[in-house]
Length: 314
Image (cartoon, rainbow, N blue to C red; front, side, top):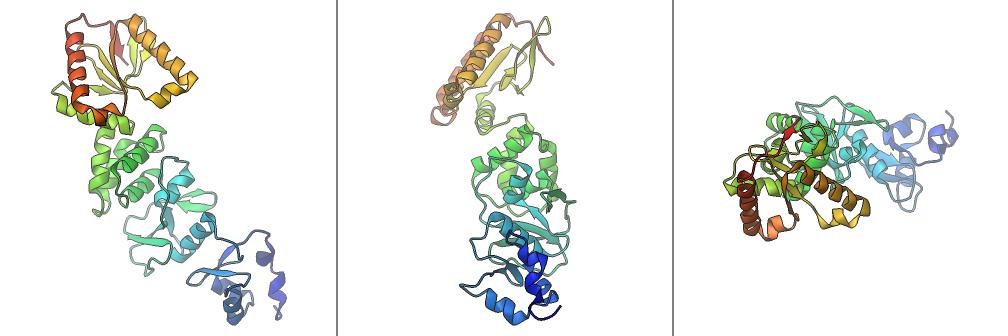
């Protein structure tokens, strides 16, 4: 290509700024000094990472940074962590502080700027999402969780992944057991109630209170049916021995007219099935734990003193 002909290359006229390796530009005939000059302010390009150029002068987007990070990791690099979870469609994830990329253990590439490089002997099989290699959801959740410090954030992220069927509790447990020891203590604690059946931060708080209560083990989020096979409810906690249900019902849930109507209908089904149900606001699990424990024990004793309702778990 003659000097200057590179300006007509389709890559440089794509309409949207592209992220490319500097050596690709050189292979197209762009002189190295021209690349350097164009990347200097206020030039039309910018250098995002060593050897990686954004062919535009505007503020780089997350998409630009992710593509640059994967180019930095080289062939076989896999996006993981919070950015990967965004790609999978999870919503209850924190704002990422960097782009987390997995590379093969033997590769000599280091973290740089906004890129966190993690070498691994367990490089997962990537799933292509929007053309990018992304780690499976269970791996991305655990990789993100190991780098976070807030228990509720980790628990909410794990709970959403499980509740929306991106992965199973056992898949998360297996990944924690098989992966790096670094940072695994907090996600291991957060996962414990989810392995038992809890599916939210509030239910995890309830799970911990139940363990202090002295009451027998209970089921979490089981499905109840009456003697005629009609669906009754799916209580947050259920003591099958006495037919006692515990529901953690938030004010925000009841602020929505449709959610409030569903709760009233659920309570009516409990009543007609003869099931005693205790309703607790999530905030009270932390602000009044001892009072809630007394209510829980009292509810269980009342249920134990009554004939067990004719309902069953399916």
